[in-house]
Each structure stands twice: as C-alpha cells, then as structure tokens.
Amino acid sequence: MSEYTAKDFKKGQPRWCPGCGDHFFLASLHKAMAEIGVAPWDTAVISGIGCSSRLPHYMNTYGMNTIHGRAAAIATGCKVANPKLTVWQVSGDGDGLAIGGNHFIHANRRNIDINMILLNNRIYGLTKGQYSPTSPRGFVSKSSPYGTVEDPFNPAELCFGARGHFFARAVATDAPGTIDILKAAYNHKGTAVCEILQNCVIFNDGTHNSVYNKEGRAKNAIYLEHGKPMLFGENKEFGLMQEGFGLKVVKLGENGITEKDILIHDAHCPDNTLQLKLALMEGPDFPIALGVIRDVDAPTYNDAVEAQIEEVKSKKKYHNFEELLMTNDIWEVK
Image (cartoon, rainbow, N blue to C red; front, side, top):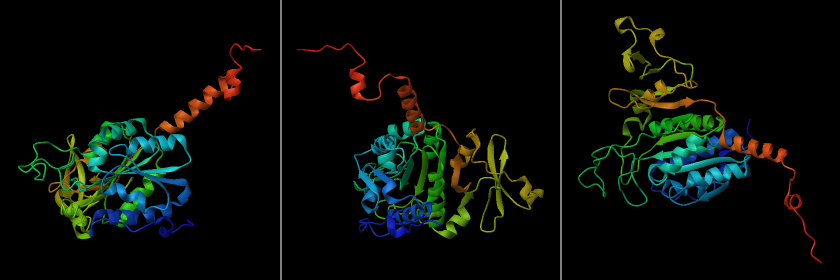
C-alpha cells in the first residue's frame, strides 16, 4: 500500500475554465501518483506553453513550466542529469506536436525514460481558438475560417513511426481508465506516450463527445487489455476479427461467430502492425481504442548514457579534474 494520498501531490488552485478537461486529468494524475507511491520530492513534472502547461503549478512536486514546444528536451535533460527522478512531461496537441513535434519524435526514437502526456483537444486554447496539428480536415476555426485544407496528425501514428515502444489512450472524464494507463506508463521503462482525449469547452466543445461520457464509451469505445479478447459494446456483444490485412467488427452469435474467433490483444508484440491498426480505428465504423495499445521493452537512452559514462571512466587514468591535469606534460615555473 502506498503511504501517499492524492492530497500529498496537490498544490494551489487550478485556473482553467470550468468544465475543462484539464481539471479531470489533474485529479486523475494526483490519484495515480498516490497509487504509484513515488515520493513528491522524487518526482518532476515538466511542461511547455499552453492551457495544459499550467499543470506543474498545481503539483506538489518538482516542476518546470518551460518554453513553447521544448518540454521534451527539458524532460530529457532532467532525466539524464538525475536518473532517479520520475519525470512526467505534459503537453497539449499544439505545444507537443507543432513546434514541439521534432522533440516528440526524437524522444520516442531515443526511448528516454519519461512519461509523455499529450492532452489532445484538437485546438489551440490559450491563444484563443486556432486549429492545431490534430484538428480534422475542414475544421473551421479563427485561423481557418473556411475550413482547414490539411490532414491532421494521429499521435499514435507519429509515435509508432518514431519507433515508440509505449502508447496508451484514455478519456479525461474517465478517471479509472486514465489512472490505469498512467500507472502502466510509470511501470514501462522508456518513453511512454499517453494520449488524453478531452474537450475545450470554449473553443472546441464536443470534439470527443462520442466517448466523453460512460454511456458513449460503452457504445463507441473498446478497452484493450493485454491477453484478453477484443470485445466491446454495452453487453460485450461485438468483437474484432482480422479480415485480410485489416480489421472488421463482428457480432457474437451471428454467422456462428463465438468468442474463440475474436482477436486477442497483444500489447507486448514487437511488431506494431496490428497495434497501429487498433490505434487508428475511428467511428462510426470502428470503436475508438482505449487503454494500453503498445507496451514493448527496449533499452533506454538514459541507462545507455549512464552505462557508457561508467565504461569510459573505468578505462581512463584520471577520475577527477586534478588527475586530468597530471596526465599531460607538467612544467614548474620558478
């Protein structure tokens, strides 16, 4: 049992709009950290710029509200400099995938042991409603009054393309689901990306309405669990099967289909082909995948750097600056 409670991680009074998904996520993060049991003074929360990036101000941990798009770079330096710290990086879809997109892909490629939280409301909220890298084609906003003519990033596709080893998804209003993936991210050694679907009640309210309440998730989402069949629906009456190189939705009992015919989720499979197909599913034809979609072990950047330093040190004749000076020619001036 953890000796901490959610209260141990709380600080200050959040200043977000009433109903903002950030409130829901913050409460879940406090509870998850309490259940994880890492002390507040062994935890760091790093953010960039944006509504969601105010989050470190409300954490009774070490924290930095850094600069736009650079949260992953700061979090990487934090983890390498002090590997004992548990590092959480919090970004919005604009901060994390636009100006911060380069850092996002390289953090995944390097597999630095940090937990990257991507709060995705498909809009720039702090700067008053411009479209973001995850806004859908045709989206009307202050910066696209006639609709965007761009296709959006899918965070999972970007993570997998950068050779990411962990990807999970939850809905901000689903506290149990959010806490589960945050705990899984902590237990994963390496870069762990958690996409949190949330609404911006001012500039993009309703963007995730199909799964934003419990009833909607029962109808329109599938909770993936490693080693368990991919069943969904209000009564688990639907499932996923493979059809050619793709997936199809089937109903149990129809055409002789039983639970034995349903695909089993393997989050630990190194080949991400099926995991990516699951992550890319969209309604209304398919359910939205929630839970841990990919969780594969791999060497971490910070462990490799630390091991390399120790290896080099063991081969050197000097171990501090004074010894370094004594390794070269020495003159005594009188």
